Image 1 (spheres, rainbow, N blue to C red):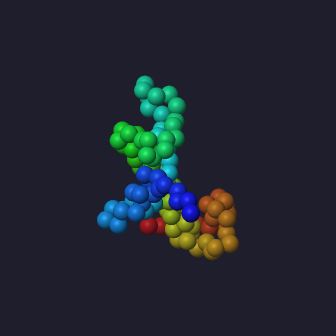
Image 2: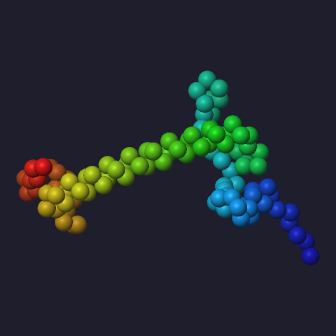
Image 3: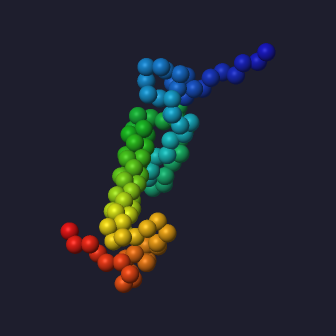
Length: 105
């Protein structure tokens, strides 16, 4: 019987005392102005601590962008409901037709 040797990432994922079960096999490291012109994908086990830090910064930027998008959508939804819109109304109908009126605050 042949047993395949576990990768470093697989071994890390088995750590019960760390929050690492969702570790990716590879990390995306965005380009660095003046230091590295291209984005890179690196096997996690080959990544340096600097690579991890830059990958974290990149993910944090994506999360911040997603939060802004979520906030914008939530605001749009709430404003539409305040105008009396129902689920089948379109955004264009609610905000650009005379049928719906803005509710005074």
